[in-house]
Length: 263
Ligand SMILES: [Fe+2]
View 1: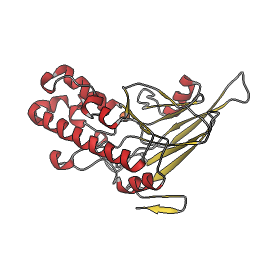
View 2: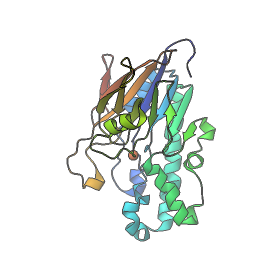
View 3: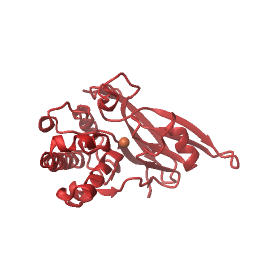
């Protein structure tokens, strides 16, 4: 993956975008403008990874299947078609502002609901997420649900919903035996790992905070929660060795990086 110089990447996930006007419910994604300004300030990026669940699609969840009839399939189709256009436009902005050489879009468990819904209700047709979002037009590489993206020889990333324990980062490192960046859990956890055989091998798994509003966890009935907001910068040397840098954000999307305020 790497030739010559240090590569800079930005990884973020779990925006849980909803069209709040169409759905008449609050937006879950944090105000994104400060982050977009930041991407622009440090452009061009070598790579950007959208790590899954950037699109919420709560109305397609199996948790809400009893409401499908009440919402109505025509209205659900309207939500999907409009929100697909919205997310495409957001991706177009990210591409333009970041000037990233490579962009990856990982499918999260929320986005997988779209495929499952289409299997049951064929009115929407049968299109995979990359087709809905027209990722080809934006030259964005699609990574289907449960896919792993390798970041050089020593690190990897995936959405991470499969690590269902109190400490997903710990389980991730025990299963992967490599440094690993996962999302989905909307909180910062760092867990160390090591090799019993090679004493120089030091590993870490990072559960990266999300880009959604920590005040609203609908499935937890909006009770207080341990979520946090943020993203990950990753600097990778030609050898594949790297330095991760987690940047945490306030729930309103504000943060400070390198002494500069983004608000
Ligand atoms: Fe997720």
